[in-house]
Amino acid sequence: MKRCDQTHAWAALQGHFEAHGRELDLREAFARDSGRFEAFSVQAPEVFADLSKNLIDIASLKFLLSLAEECELPARRDAMLRGEIANPTEGRAVLHTALRAPPGAGPFSAEVHSVLNAMLDFAERVRGDTGPGGFTDVVHIGIGGSDLGPQMVVPALQSCTEARQRLHFVSNVDGHDISEVLKTLDARKTLFIIASKTFTTQETLANARAARDWFFAQGGTDTERHFVAATSNVAAAAGFGISTTFGFWDWVGGRYSLWSAIGLPIAVAIGAPAFREFLAGAHAMDRHFAQAPLAQNLPVLLGLLDLWYRNFHGFRSRSVAPYHQGLKRLPAYLQQLEMESNGKRVDLAGELLPFATSPVVWGEPGTNGQHAYFQMLHQGSDVVPVEFIAVKQPAHPLAEQHRMLLANCLAQSQALMLGKTAAQALAERAPTAGTDFDPQVLAMHRSFPGNRPSTTLVLEALTPRSLGALIALYEHRVYTSGALWGINSFDQWGVELGKALCNALLPRLSSGDTEGLDGSTAGLLRRLHG
Ligand code: F6P
Image 1 (cartoon, rainbow, N blue to C red):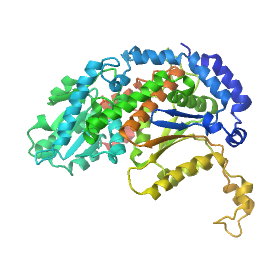
Image 2 (cartoon, rainbow, N blue to C red):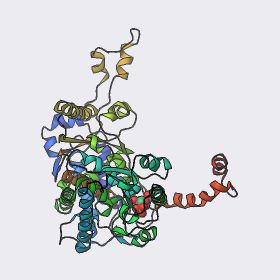
Image 3 (cartoon, protein in one colour):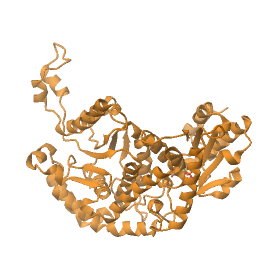
Image 4 (cartoon, helix red, strand yellow):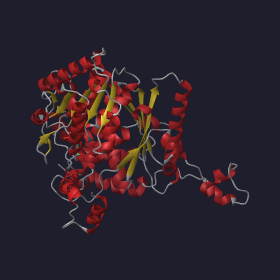
């Protein structure tokens, strides 16, 4: 299997980039080709994608698709979906797709559906018990992949479902996080979900202990009823005193685990039928990824674009702009999904890579981002491809505000592409010009380079099904770029060193012992200990 830079297509892309790609002008491309929008847009399950405002042409796309073929992307994808070891540094299969396959389809179907049914039954019981003895509040305690998925999905689906309980998420080891939540709760009416794949994570265990201590201090006794766990380490959960446990398996990576028992708070918030819809949407995208020809395969196309921008154009980051308030945590979720997966600099053979991998992924919901950092996107010195997400149907009755939202979304991608020359700026009347400021100079300040790329993803409505499809789209896109880069997208050794050093420093924060530490850490520890 070849790495992207060892292919003929890579060399062809380099030649094409130097000859045409670097200079491609989107305004000219649209002027030349009235069918550009149709040629560069794709309808995948639940998600329409306009790729036409990206810096690609037919030739670059052709070479990128050849690159995917030469790297044997389809064969590698199929091997992963079959359950072969796709995470070799941890010796594991990668089968989050099995979690959303219908009964009887996909590997481990019997185990998957048995836990799923048990979890959904439990969620329905929690939802259904709204009497005086029922739960009014559910606190989900977890971090990273055991937090970001549910924390993103629950608010996203709030407006189209009926949550019966208040959902709270606690992740940070910073005691402010859990303290603020506990203040608002009644122990007799609170359910705690302790979510940790390993059940060894420092932050989660510290918060779980704090929750249990608080529960006892409030006079609670029935931990069996008030504490449940989602984990693949059932023994450790039992050791903590939790007897109701929903398990999952080592072939579910942490940042791919919201489809498993880690999704319990989602099921409590939206109910079993909607959770099944959520899985069905993801499964539809899985089938698209597995079956659509590469040229119409949306996750593959987005992964190829990521490589094109990172390795040829040299763009260092990508901004995500969801034009739906419900998706406010999507950028944070994608930061883990993309950067923990593809933030690697060594290939599968242990070779240092001679090219760049994961971009920095960041963003905020539109229109808030417009009034913060869009200045830089439009006029800054770096080009940052932007990914807009528009949702056609709102889940609120404020139709005019929704039109404003969509107009803003369209205007931003239009402005990034069209830009404005100094001559155009000069021809306009400057609204804030000081009388003695040179109009030519002012026009420079008011000009926009344009030709800045963006993708727009469109959902008909934000529903459990469409959100499931959208998340699966991102998962497979990350897989695509990671596979072409020749890295293992499914391990995360980069988080281990800091954890080990933290464990070694923890006792020193009480003792104040700085023996053998580097000068800076010793100096800081002296300031902080005690
Ligand atoms: O941050 C590293 C990490 O291992 C993530 O990959 C994972 O999602 C998170 O910690 C939480 O781990 P656990 O579910 O085992 O508590």
